[in-house]
Image (cartoon, rainbow, N blue to C red; front, side, top):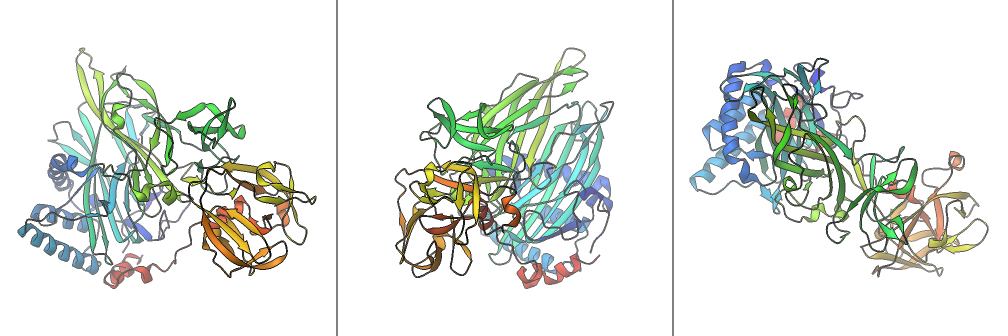
Length: 632
C-alpha cells in the first residue's frame, strides 16, 4: 500500500530511491499517506490542541526525553492513536498484525490500570526507544517575509524494533492556541529496523507574523514481538513565527577538518593520533600540542591544511581528568536570537539544551549535566564552546552502552537541540518573550558529513617491524617514508602515516611454535594461514597463522595488562604502490607475525551486512502487513 506523493521525502537522501531505502538500519522503510490529506484540518487542529495540553502536563516526568508515553488504557489517547494510524492509511484490513497487536496492548493497559500498576517501557534502567523532532533553522525568502522549514522525526530503539510508525504534523497557530491551521504533514513506517529511523520529514512554508507560533507534533509507535515491548509516544515542539531568523543555530564543530576520509566523515581519535583524525585527545608535551600525550588536557581539531597537526586555537579543555571510557564530542555552536520588527532580539533564557549521540544499535547517549546553565544569555549573537561528555543515558545515568568501548569503530549520528525564550522589543518599547526550538544534526539527512567514528587500536611499543632493507626496528622508531616488507614474496610498501596512541583494554599476546611472540591491541587484524583476516582477540590456541617463516600454530593466546605502554599503527602504501595491491594485502611483519595495517583494520571493523530479506526477520504476525506495505 503506497499512497501519496514522494516529494516530501526528497530532502532525506536526495540520491536514493525511497522505496525500500536502507538508512541507518537494515530495515525496509517507506512513506504513508500524509494525515492531513484524509482528515479535515479542523479535526486535526483540535486533536493537536488536546494532545498538546496533555504533553505540557507530563513532559517533565520523562527525564532527558522530548516525548511522553501514551497510555492506551485512556480512551481518548487510544482513540487518538487509532485515528492517526487510519489517517495515514493504516487499517485493520491492510495491517491486520499491527491492529491485532494494538488490541493486545490496549487489553494489557486496561488490566494494568485496574491493578494500578505503572506502564513499563523501560529496560535495563533506560528507555527502550527515543522519539524526538529535529527542527533545523529555516530558510528565509528573499524578502524575509516567509520561512521554509524542513523538520523531521527521529525514532531509535535499543536493539531495533520489528515495526516503527511515525508521523509529523506542522501547525501555524496563534499564541493563545485558539486558532490554527495545518501547514504540512507526513507519515512513514519501517519494518525490521528501528535503530535509527529518520524517514518521516516534510516541508513547511509559513509567513513571518507577530503573535504566531509554529507547532510541530509527532506520534510514534514501535513494537518488538520477540520481547513483547511496545513504545507509543507523542512529541511536541513550538517556535515563534514572529522572529526573522538569520543563522539561528550553526554547528561549527564537530565537522570534517581532514578532507577525503575514506570511511566515516568525521573521525574522533580518542585513543590515538594520525593524519586521518579530524579530532584527537591532545595535550602539550615539551611545548608542542600532541595527540594522545602522557597527560591528556583536552580534545583538539586537526589543521585542514596540515592533517595530523593539531590546532591550538581549536582545543577544548577537559573540565575534569580525562577518562578513556567516556566519549567526548567538541562542540562549537553559533547562536543567533533572530529579530523582530527589524530590531535584534537577545536570548533571555534556555529551557533545554542537549547533545545526543545515536549509535547504530539504537542507543541514545546524551551530554552530562545541565547545559542550559552554561549557555550564554543576554546576547543577540553568541558562540558556545563546550566539550560534551556523552557517556550518559536519557535518565542521566552512566551507561555501559554509552562507553567508548561500545561506540568504538561504530558510525554514530549526532544531534544538538536548544529551546528557550528570546527577549524582543516591540515598536512601543515594550518587551515580549518569543519561544524558540532549534536543532542541528549530523545524520543520514545531512548534506555534508553524515556520521562520526571513534577510532583506535594498534601494536604495543617494542613490536619489531621488518623493513625492506633488512633492518628490524621497534614500531615506535618507524617513521613516515620508511619502507616495510609486506609479505614473503617481497612486496614493499611505504609508510604513509604513523599513528600513536594509548590503550585501556588488556593486550592480546600471541606466541607460536616457530618462536614468535607479539603483543597487539584486541582489534588489530592478524592473517590466518587460510588467508582470513581476524581480530587478535578472536584467535585461540592451535589456530594456524601466517609468519615470516610460513604457517605456524599458536601455542599461547593470553590477555596481558597494558601497564601504561604506548601503542602504534602504520598506514601503508602510496597511491602508486596500491594500484596493484588488494585490500587485504596491506600487511607487514610485526615481531614475525603477518598483521594488517590501519586500512585493513578499518575494513575488518566495518559492521557486518545484515540479510536483505526483511520478511525472514519479521514475526509472523507482521508478514501480511509487510507484504501489503510493499505493494505499489
